[in-house]
Amino acid sequence: MNYQDERRSFMKKMALGSLGISALAMQNKLKLMQSAFAAGTYSSLTDHKSLVCVFLYGGNDAFNMFVPYETTAYDNYANIRKNLAIPRDSLVPVSGGENSFHPSMAQSAALYDQGKLALVSNVGTLYEPVTRAQILDHTAVLPPDLYSHSHQQEIWQTGLSHAIGVDNSGWGGRMADLLMDANSNPVLPPTFTLHGNNFWQMGDLSEPLAVSPWYGVSKFDFYDETDSPARHSTWQQMLAISRNHILGSHLASTTTDAITRLGALRDAYLNSPTLQTPYNPNSKLSRELHAVAKLIAIRQTLGLKRQIFFVAIGGFDTHSEQLTIHSERLAELDSALQSFYQMTQELGVEDTVTTFTASEFGRSLTINGDGTDHAWGSHALIMGGDVAGGRIIGELPAYELGGPDDVKDDGRFIPKIATDQYGATLARWMDLDDSDLNAVFPHLANFSVRDLGFFNSAADSDNDGVPDQLDNCPTTSNSSQANNDGDAQGDACDSDDDNDGMNDEWETAHGFDPFDAADKNLDPDQDGFTNLQESRFGSDPHVFDTDNDNNGIPDSVDKRRRGALPAIIDLVLNQKGPG
Image 1 (tube, rainbow, N blue to C red):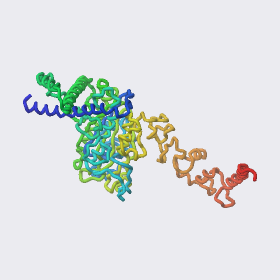
Image 2 (image 1 turned 135 degrees about the horizontal axis):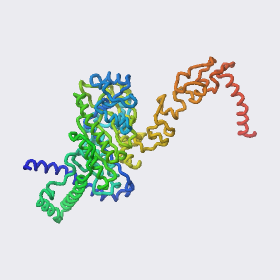
Image 3 (image 1 turned 90 degrees about the vertical axis):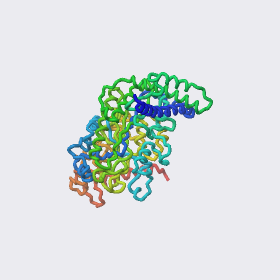
């Protein structure tokens, strides 16, 4: 190795190592400060769970990633998207043909159909629920700099609303602060980054440990005993020197500590099992997720019951040449997600690893030539064995320019799910107590739904495979979620499936279709009373009723009511008593 190569190698290893020193030094700080917190909150956790964030830098165009497939809905989409619309015959349909994935995401579509991947619809940065009317009359509380890459990346990853650019902690890091107690090895953080610095993993008390997808976990070249015994010996002597200055002493002890811990992590990483699942070594994202799988494989050796990982892929800022560029990015994402899920299956941890995507914002439904502009709400993907997949979490926005979901009139959609709600659902799956969620997600209290219910392990009272949070009949088995009238109740528990005002049992008993709302206006006995009126009177719709006093009530009902009146009067008098 020549001098220039050696210098580059030294700088590269030093960059990786310096983050390691910083992270591990913060763990010392954590140990010193833990006494200020209630001890043992999460120490009783015995199982393993890992959370993997895949950040799509640039602003993913989710509206070409997940496309309406039903003919009328697709035609509306294509009319707005014009030359950027994905041809319908190339899309990969899911959801019984209502929607579809981009042709570059066939493997993700397969995971969706297998129930291992779900789509979280129209999620974005929000401090509180917002409507179009509030935005137009300037009463809405909005995140600052909505269409700025750097600002929205920071807000998405931190979940905080104070000044942009301040040294913020991220909600992944704040989770890590709390979950440190779950890990039996106090010298390693639960957070690992495979894609360099990020706000998401920065805690108030912890920082992520950097691992290179190319070089793994590095020792320090300048300290490597094998490469240079003399230099190694010199460093040992320097670090062992007694120092009177507190900062010098602290630096020496921290460096020694970091070298020891990184060495142990490196040895465990190098000895991790060789994964047989194929992946694309030319894709940086695939390499990052492969490294994540290796770190999960050595979790027991490292004493880590909770792990939080960050990987990323860029190139989603598609102002031009979108059809080509976006297709390439989605293909790389699709391949990486599929191979990583297979790796978790190989390791037998698919049910305890959840992978989710995020992007700073979505893109406009309208186009600007051969690209799209920055927008707001977007769709995210969540993948894992415990994910209640094959479904859309939330509601897809109305593809209507100037409609109720549009900020103005160019298809920049207002999010309906806040990043706090998205993150809180993931945090609860990681077993954070509900009482800790407001500290991790400071705006969560502004939203009525704290858990989006996209995990199979979430409460499922009727055991129909649909979590209560998503179930339109939470106490009545209804796995198909059939809902004829589109109201809040599924057919299995809805007493009026066609929403025509007539009870289903009454309609069935009298030979009417409980799924046909039009029959409420019929009058089969030709007595002037419709089926809806007969159902409310409790009269027989097939028996002609007279109305001799013209009070709008069948005589049979009048007679029944008059017959009941004396008994009601006697009851009232008896309750009132004599005198």
